[in-house]
Amino acid sequence: MNARTSEGTAKAVRAAVEAAVWAPSLHNTQPWSFSVFGEEIGVRADPERRLRVEDTSGREMLIGCGAALFNVRITLRAMDYLPLVRLLPDPDRPNLLATVRPGTLVAADEHARLMHAEIERRRTHRGAFADIPLSEEFLDALGREASEEGARLVPIGSQAAVEVLAALTCAAQRVQEQDQPFALEVLRWSRPPGSTRRDGVPAGAYPLEPGRTDPEFLQRDYARGQPWGYGRRPEDPEAASAGVVAVLTTAGDVREHWLAAGQALQRVLLRASAHGVSAAFHTQALEFSHLREFLRQELLSGEHPQMIMRLGVTLEVPEGARRPPEVIEEQ
Ligand SMILES: Cc1cc2nc3c(=O)[nH]c(=O)nc-3n(C[C@H](O)[C@H](O)[C@H](O)COP(=O)(O)O)c2cc1C
Image (cartoon, rainbow, N blue to C red; front, side, top):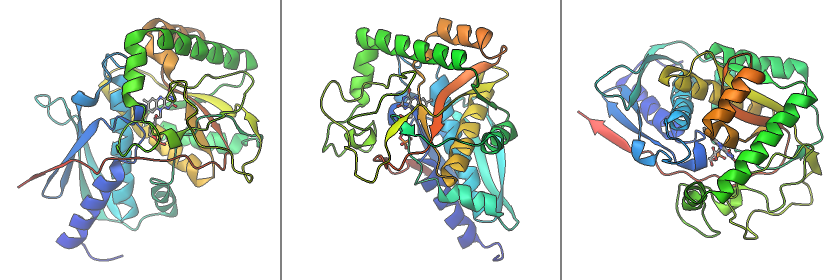
């Protein structure tokens, strides 16, 4: 491990901001910007990129920003700095979600390095998984990662509860497809093949044939009825499993909890990715407050659902797209 130098910390700060943008965000809106003031990184929400129809409260925007914040933290940690984080440091600047500084040097552990190595490799999956079970021990380990960030990852064990989640997902998806403002919002963020835009969901990010799962979890319709999406390669295993259905929850439901959910989400996803496990998301039902409340009361013992996901194994490599980080350099 090297001594602390201003070049070293400047390099780590740059790397942390570059890694931040590889966080997941609803429809790949990338609703964030960053500032660098000396050694201090500011992680900000970009409300211009909030989805007006689907995300009225900004909850999903803050989950994405929380995931970006985790990338900043884990990058500094993997580069041997203990990150010093202040959450929501200034009530007069509500879009400033966190400041992070590289703290003292302590050699990074293997865990931090492994997670960091997954930041750019991780992709959202959209379809069925290979029929390979995930062990209880592995799911417990993911649960511990979520708990470390103040959230809970709840694997849904009962088949009846899985069917309820699938049914609500399908119902919410069908309603959103029929509702013009919802449908237009998805349309606005879906990208046709050949698009050079670096945000939104590109046609190479989902399979042409998602594979049928039992029960069926409908995907968002990014292809707008067109034959878009990547094809199956001969080496891809037959995909017919829904995988493990899990819900990420928090005890409360204010901005602090959404940021915690985002950090927990990214921590779980990176740990999973390091073990060859991907996640598919189905958050349509959570965009209807009454369905969200129903899930909270009936399935989740009063905890607030933040993300609905399926976890499983796939060899498919969907396309990833990102804008370079927007950084305001302050003197
Ligand atoms: C709050 C939130 C909600 C999301 N909901 C969905 C969803 O319902 N369906 C889906 O296919 N992807 C969903 N995603 C995944 C994003 O579409 C994905 O992160 C983004 O397109 C970037 O792609 P990547 O994760 O492969 O890097 C969600 C992500 C976040 C952070």
